[in-house]
Image (cartoon, rainbow, N blue to C red; front, side, top):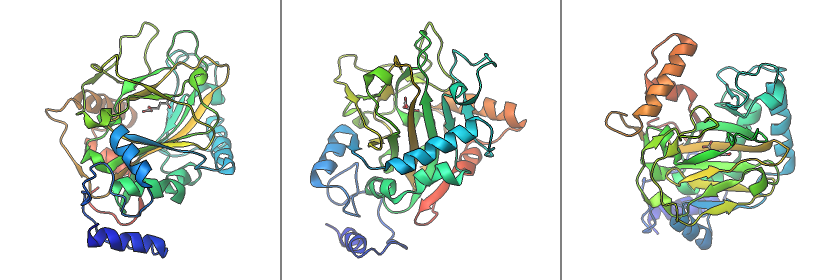
Length: 324
Ligand SMILES: O=C(O)CCC(=O)C(=O)O
């Protein structure tokens, strides 16, 4: 272990937190996808993430925190509180039906960086200690969402197509970015659990397009065009509080919710603050960047450069601000 790694492990042991040592973006230990300067991951957990591109930690978030998020979601959906900058999404099957209101109308809220209650999930040391093992100590939260997957109307629009989250981020290096996704209730195949293709984080970013689904596809639910249909799949059956951390190149999605209840999960994306922006030109991400620019223009009347719009949503959640 290099000296800087050893020092940071010792700082972790004695509870010394900020400022952390400026660390390298690569691990000196031969591991590529984890840094583990804080020694949080056991050898087994580290090996699992390196090989599979994800790691499930059971019972990480306590029930009382999940209850707080659930109540806040209700307050937002019923307009008891307004949060600036929040994205509220309706499932395509009911998008035009204005008779449906409140929680039942919303399949996802995202970008809640201006809400201290929901955003406390992204500040939580329980979450950040695992994120830090992947990104290093200076961490920027780059996206947040609470997903309220509705009971399917029969059109199968509650599915989330297989995709790689990196399609939505112009940040690199991708190995220093991670997602956290916490089940707010018991989630299994009946209500549309996450499904992951283990090991696909070792593949490059693939081209993403809207799938050709008869019943319609939700806005921004891009899917990968080519993936191995026969590749092994893991269906992540999770209990409330269980949390999965995953690499942004991991191919994943979620199934149809055939139960009669809404299925809730809270999630965040985190990057090392040392990451940098890339230009979308010449990449497969231009379709997303162009669509987002159009949405922003319709909402604000302005042409907002992608990087400027992205930075406005970013929040340092640990350590110090660097490139992003
Ligand atoms: O919670 C889900 O159903 C899938 C979420 C997901 O993969 C995403 O929003 O990128």
